[in-house]
Length: 444
Image (cartoon, rainbow, N blue to C red; front, side, top):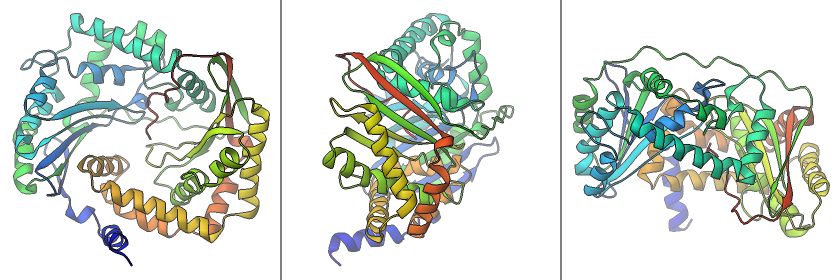
């Protein structure tokens, strides 16, 4: 075994959860601190248990819009002052909204962490929402929607696909919200959303980096411990009914290439089949030597690109997707048949041990190398915590390693069922000068 392989093996056998300092403050705030002393820096992340799944038709887009407004000041800080303070202290900050959560993060020198804790605690309960700042930011978000969805072929296709694949679950609408809902959103709507979901008992604070866990916990307790908890937010209760028949949707847009998306309903990380689905997606599209890429891109030249994606850490059951851009002059029907043939082959003949081993090695390497980043360590801890328990992070690799060829064939047979899928097709109406950006919220 060479040095690199030995290092990888040692890293992959080391559990992460036992190194985490865990606490729940009296106000309900969950705190996770992971010391990592490779460099004198730290990442602070605040995760709120609210995303587009916590909205309702007629009021979509509130979570994402509120994320924008969280930088517009409190009683203590002026508009955009949060960002300026971070930059003056040599740090970087940003935020993102997904279907399941809203996250704010800063990376900076570890000795500046108390400053960031104070700023995040301040805006957790002290955001100042005023109309003169709300109206311009609303226009910014509406323009973002135009760029990512209305004018972007991928965005438009994925929106229509989700709205067709779901009948009951709030994953049916876009994270950025429908345009009509944005047009009718009021400052009062946003204030209510903020008061409902932005509270210590609905948040997780994660810190990873060159920190002393005990001292850091005391710093967190000092600034966040004084905040009052909120009422328990309403639970997301809709359950998507079983799909009994293939659904199809066609989107016609200016675009340079025709595109195709298959979407199958699948469970998430809490289901016993999750590891096998994770391995299956890697076998199908994990790199240029994967099944789909090798067959459809390199050998048959039917697709310019193709991928398979399993949203492992989605809070609710989601969609396993196949996404392909057709090669110029390729007919969509021909591309569909080629993908169907590969799925049928997987179901009928399964996978070779060589493919299985390669996919498992890829997943293990990706997971281990991600541990070199404070940011991604914190992100994984938070996402497993939001799914029930951060300790699930240490069950990921054992789960992947335990997957057999029979498991992969079984989940392919159970979930890649034509009657349970939705097919989205993008038909170009003419050439486009706009880039084919991925849809907003593509991160799973």
